[in-house]
Amino acid sequence: MIYQNLLLAKKQGRKLLAILLDPDKISLSKVSDILAKLHSSGVDYIFVGGSTVEKGVTNELVYLLKKQTTIPVILFPGHYSQITSHADAILFLSLISGRNPEYLISQQVKAVPMIKRSGLEVIPTGYILIDGGKESSVQKISETKPIKPMDLEEITHTACAGMYMGKKIIYLEAGSGALAPVSPAIIEAVKENINIPLIVGGGIRSENELRSAFQSGADLVVIGTAFEENNNLLTKIMKNEHIH
Image (cartoon, rainbow, N blue to C red):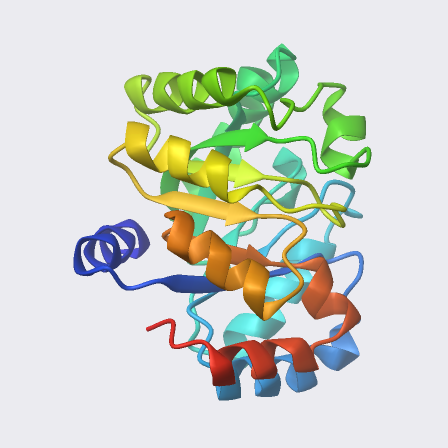
């Protein structure tokens, strides 16, 4: 069980790393090369998802990944059509930082038939979008506004509300290609107020930013755009950062 492993790692103080692959940006012919780099770096999870993904592409990518790796593959869908039974689990996201019912409950209702057929492990996740300095694809697609980084109280209260509603994970997201990652102050504040695993992603491009996120309280950090732009970065990070 993916979630039980997350809880165990949190209890033991082990920091985890995930790579986010966007099906619209990953060529299927490059999957073997990508996995070779992931296998040599000791990545814990592969997240698959994007805000705008062509129908069927997620299924093809996950199928190929599962044929060639034992690294758990977790769906991180921006739309209910991105669900595939080939994955190991799904972060069942609710965009709790926004007020658009489509991404609070409607997309989730539409996903139910596919999830029931899939056999996926479902992990209820409170998804909080933090302003990363530029309009993110999540912001555009969901038609919601991110929370300003200085609004610490709103951020922490939103995270707590998600936890009280039964979310099993809180995910702080600065957005794909963010100019600035989620700040240490935000991570620390949320960490102090919740007792469930904390995921942080968006805008993390360097060893220092990764280390800062972990030291501030992230249990799992997600790297996406930085890996897409330079997948040698991952090898460098893992070589110099004793995550496990």
